[in-house]
Length: 201
Ligand code: IMP
Ligand code: MG
Image (tube, rainbow, N blue to C red; front, side, top):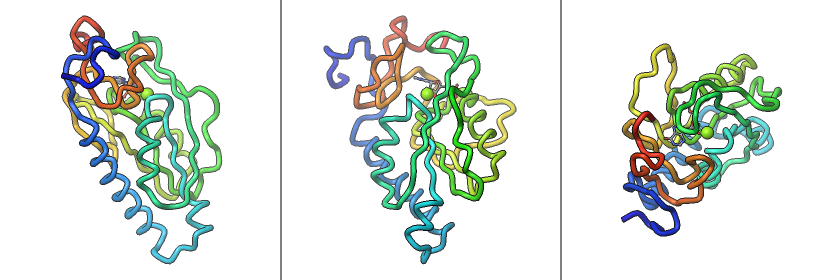
C-alpha cells in the first residue's frame, strides 16, 4: 500500500520507495563529485572550483531531486534554474518544449550539469542541452532521476547519470506531478489507470 494513501488519492503502486531513492541519490552525488573533482584536478583551489561548477535544475519537476542531490555533492558550486514549458499537449503528453525566460549566458569554460526529474520524450532536455552546448562549456553533462524505457528516435545523446530506468508508465511523486499535484509525495508511484494512470501516456 502506498504511504499516505488517504492523503494522496488514486495512487496505484510504488515503483521506488524513499529508502531506494535516498540510497541512489547518494551514489549519484558521490559519482558526480568524483567526476568533477577529476576534471578540475585534485589540487584545484576552492575559489576556482566554486566559479567553475554550475548546476542547472530544470523547473519544476527537478526541485525535490536537486535539493537532495546537491547535498550529496560536497563541492562549491552555483545553481542556475531554467524553466521549460511543454506545449501544447495535455498534462500527460508532452508535445514540445520551450524555454521560459533567459538561459544563463555565462557558461563558457564552466563545468555544467543539467538536472531534471525524468527523461521521457527527451524534448525538454534535448533543447536545454543543445542551447547550453552552443556556449561551449568546459564540460556538459545531464543527470536525470528517471529514464523511461521508450524509443527516442533521432536522439544522439544519453544522460551521463541516470538514477533509475523505469517502464514507460506515468509516474508521480518526489517532484513529479500530475496536473500540478503529487510533487510532495515522497516516493515514486504510478496512478490508477483512468485517474491520470497509464493509458495514452
Ligand atoms: P520530455 O518528454 O522528456 O520532454 O519530458 C518533459 C517533462 O514532462 C519532464 O521534465 C517531466 O516534467 C514531464 N514528465 C514526463 N513524464 C512524466 C511522468 O511520467 N510523470 C510526470 N511528469 C512527467
Ligand atoms: Mg519537468
